Image (tube, rainbow, N blue to C red; front, side, top):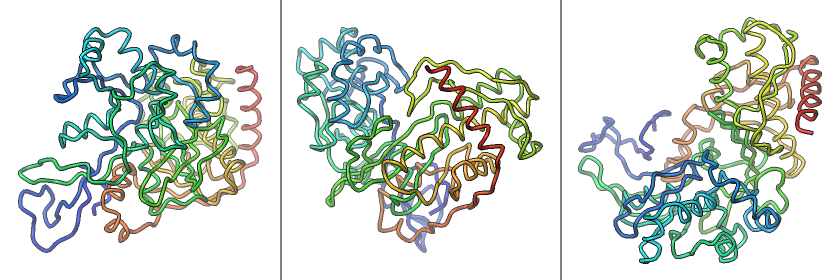
Length: 427
């Protein structure tokens, strides 16, 4: 399979070109779907006609309503492994019920479905509405112990379980859909971040997988459900006939978004910023950057934090401080994962920011662990591996590049100063 195949199809080499196939000498044998995990679609049952624009995971419009349930957060965490947050689907579903007349009418007529984006797309593609656990869990309505929708949580949020889609294994026959005259089986459905560990082969509990995109998402696979994940997240990666594969998960909101914000503020194009890092000496006295871009995710959970520099510097030095802050925030999450899940031996990185050797070297030096860089399309590759595991087993699992840790005393000192400054600002 090509390392970068935009359609998330599992492909198989064959001698003769398949009719209508987009890539010569390849046959499409299965399809997989990966979506952002917390976006919600309100629609009519049967037609799946949307009743309101889909509400993105970043939309926190119902945060004030959710605060009234704060006393229930320990119970919600116990059932879901997640904090009470407006980023997840339950408060979005509740907002639609409270503010969209068409949603209330459909509910009264028994015609309402409230679907994670993945379930809506599966229904539109195949005519059979279904969802996988990784997407279901991001609604805050899915019990990761019982591996099913929770009647208790549905009651708490005032949501009828009948409005939710059937939930089954990650890999199953979700149905078929047509592409260029072909009928393709959809055999896997998952979340964008949940797919990433599968891009590197069989997920390894001694490895943390870091996807460096707009945000940084960190996954550590676990065979057993994490009992007390906070201040991290307890997530599920997949479910099959052998049982569930769980993960400890961390989030850094200001990764690629922090780079974009700095580019806009400095007036320097992003493509021109990255080469500047090579001009910085390892012991360059960089300023510090308190990276509140998009708010602080785990382990701090401050959604309204501000971003600021401490100290002055050139454009290159200030950009280095921004990238270094991403390294420090990822490292904080990884060290907590090591405390809760045992020793980590490798860090696997992917995503757009992983192209930076400077960033990867800093991460290796900070954690004193080898960093292995995979291809940039880890979600696509992981989804394909789930869709056709018997074919994925033949793929090379070698890293694109491995970077071993090097000593950097100044980096450790800056990290301590950064920690002190962050604590002071977050109280």
